[in-house]
Length: 453
Image (cartoon, rainbow, N blue to C red):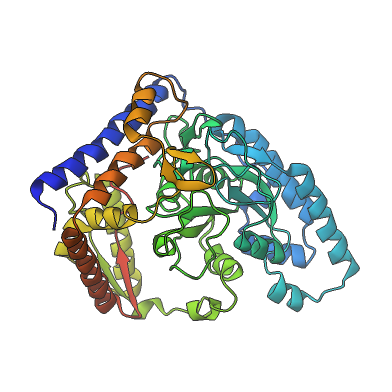
């Protein structure tokens, strides 16, 4: 495995990113006031997607009323949050009116609608890195200046077929390469609970909308925490599914490497936890979704729980006390309510997990980046050194975080085949340990991130 020098080189590269991202956020926060968002004044915004779909099917509420309520909320909070890249409000209202007319005509039974269109009339927001036909699809990039999706991604089509009505595409950091959400096109997205803080990244636009009650379900993506970290920071739910159950087409960045789908996932996000099973069922591959057993009841009294409070990696900071407290509250909840005694564990291989995961991902064929010479060929790069020099002297519009990808990929590619084989073996060992530990009824609790928003 890596020698001590190699570990410290990677540590320095990670810290170089922290030293640019952290001051940027903190300095800007000094010039902002903690302005509370307008209170939610429409009860339609307080229902889960599951509840909204049921009430729309039963004609207890109108689809147009629901869509209009969310449009009004987005307009109320976006000046403070800066989540929206492009909206399609007029089209969404037209689609909502069609739903109301179809329901009034009574051409489908309630049972058939529940089975074939389980999310009928439910508004959804979409991360701008995902292809939504006719909408901006550029992943926060300055080059090219504009890119519009000519067709829907396969999973977007499934959600539309399930009845969802897209409202907008939301902000993301440049090429999705940052744990905060800012770029030089749309600007900085803010946390709905405190605009001086970050909503996380790269799905920060989605998380901020959900946390503000301006969206009920959101479509995001995740490779190294992009759907889970923003969910943590904004108090909502983000899920990175098992590879292979949701298509990964129609996303920027993308890599042609055959291993890309083992790491990258489309990530459902939602405001209410009860929506995750229905959402995941609607978006997943119809030929595989039964394997997920999403409709199978779970007896919480029979599960095993394992947890780790502290991140053992050299690349990680100490876990914040508030996050540890939350972990302990979850452990205590299962003990008090279900008589499940969680087991705190130590896994030595986790000391190397960031290095292993990072190198394995970075050695894949290049994905879209700020270095590529042409839009059609992500593998052909401009000089990393020259691009950095231009950035230092202000001759490029790129933000700094995606520039980090260049040197760390070069470093990962330089690692010997012997060292890389050792990493792959450690990865297999770690996966086997988790498989044996968790089985079919185990849950592992682990800090989503080391620090607060």
